[in-house]
Amino acid sequence: MAIISGKAFWVKLDKPQNKFDENKLRYSLDLSLDKEGVKEMRAEGFTIKNKTKEVPSDQRGDFVTIYANEKTYNGRVLPKPNLFDANKIRLNGVLIGNGSKVNVQYKKLDYDVAGRKGSRPVLKGVQVIELLEYSPPDEFARVEGYVAPIPADEEAVVINEENDIPFVD
Image (tube, rainbow, N blue to C red; front, side):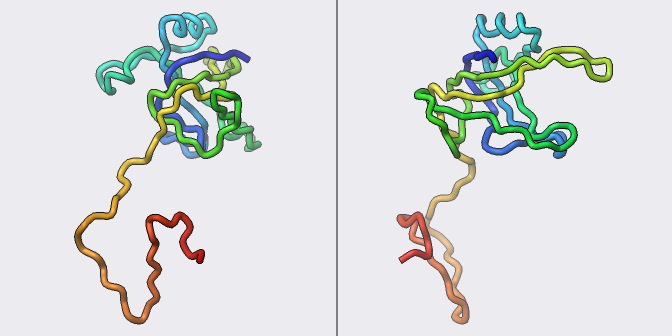
């Protein structure tokens, strides 16, 4: 297996996704490459893509999409790619934000399917070197304004923001 370094964008390692086909879910990331990285990936026979004006300036440039399918063609579940920190400690539940520096472990897969030949990198693992943590958009904060009345015949549960575990004394 080989390792390539770069900045990660559009990382989907927490759960497999595929907005184009719900039957072919995959773990994936776009890895932004420097000139040496482009040279290495081209030498392997991989397709290098280039983002230009349609994305923010920090996401422009040469990149390769690296992914691993969730299942085989006959439905067998494949192992999820490993995720590690810089000290090789396994991470769980960490969401990687755009621009995080990573090392990506991959395996070269040569294919010849339905007249299409080529090679692609199969995602095996990611080591986070510099984390820019992803935080989901549209999270609300408590603000002044309308507060709904509590019906007299129903019990209401009020969650104190300082308490992470509601319903515990």
